[in-house]
Image 1 (tube, rainbow, N blue to C red):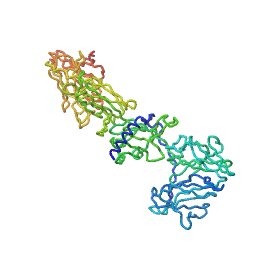
Image 2 (image 1 turned 30 degrees about the vertical axis):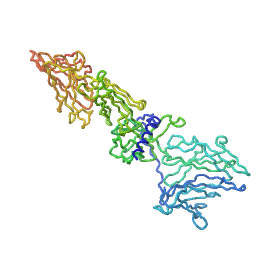
Image 3 (image 1 turned 90 degrees about the horizontal axis):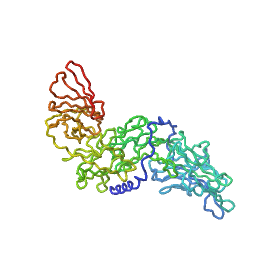
Image 4 (image 1 turned 60 degrees about the vertical axis):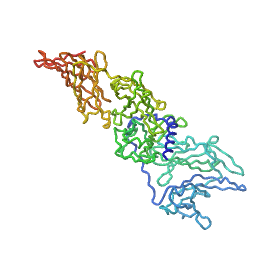
Length: 631
């Protein structure tokens, strides 16, 4: 079974990934307001089950010695699908007449096993119903269908294109592909007619069929081959009756279109990843925890949709926190079948019309291959490559990791059919980071140790199949300095721990802090902050430096800048405050010999985007403050 599923998955990926792209229509959340209120549909009647349909009426094509008769064809499901042993059929002339069972001699005629329909002689208007025998519904009856009297011997021959549609939706015309042929037997000969050559000989009438009890209601004025469902039709089935003009043709063909009429609720995927997905819908869904349900799945185990996993982000935007293996092949629906949660593919129908499709979240259709090469100069480097993307909460996190091999320095995020693993990246934007080695710094694509200077790659439908390729040019660890200077400080966080917000608790990693020589722009030293966020650079050469903490997903508003001299060899309390998204310098204290008119100097770089600019705040001995803009 597992191998079969694997083969099917391969076929789906190779055949459907390109053939069925993600929806081309992006939905504006809640653009259409609240879901429209629908008409309440009458429930099923006690002791009844709506399983009988009238398929058609016309003459029997087996003509014997110039004689034939009119008959009606009834359709019903297999008894095993209903849960009974057999059916019998009853008939009556009108609503006031008693029901009579159709007999085979003295015995009621049984319909069982593989029977899905039967013909009855149609002399005039008659009512028919099934009676169920055996099983839990023993004694139940079906809905009633009624034949109509025919004035001549006519019958439909065929339709060249099926009038069925997958979904009947409010505002979307149906019936445009109706194409029929029919014939009349008169005076010993048969005359053929078709909707293409004799359209005036055919008549049409649309009905609403109650799926709960089978009742049929004429739709007033709906007498053309095309009908556009209205909101008040939602929840009903559509049936078209095709007939003749009573002069050239007199027959009836009934065709029920698949499913019930529903209000399309257009959706698009705002996010999809290993931790779940986010849907935008054009209507606002009230009580989403009850409204969304999981329909068909194609997994060995049938998962259930935990209502607590669903939350509203804003009106028309809904978050589903679901592990990938529980929605990889899932169809998501609304609990009321009169609303159809749908993806729309613009112009991709058989005739160039819009194509409506279930919200079918197959994660294979939202993933792409990425190949990364890590090298120091021309030398390949074996290191781990992290793909850093936004998670379902919008925070940058390591979404997947792959090991680059020693021979070529190549890591591939791909699907491996032999090991049944899949490290491909979900559609979205990613930073690629090569982890530090004994000889190299942590380096982001294309060639920087600093998050803010990294370049995003885009994984999307257009490049998913062929894949992205990226080369990371690793940065070497700088040579050890031999000076006498010291720079130390602390990074405080609003989080309970000192781990970078881009990393999980399982991958807790120290924050890296770099020294950048302002005269060259090069990184000249690195240290890792300890568990308390403290860091210390020793043996620093005299000069001017930027102190740059680096955290995945966090933007540095402006780096602190310090100057070491023989008179001022130590700078302490270079402090930063870190949130989920920002690194903000909060102060610097320079240890120096007291000047005649100055007590201390504080550097504050908040609000400056240029690394070589800052605000020097000097408190004078008399208590006044002098501000000097450094350029």
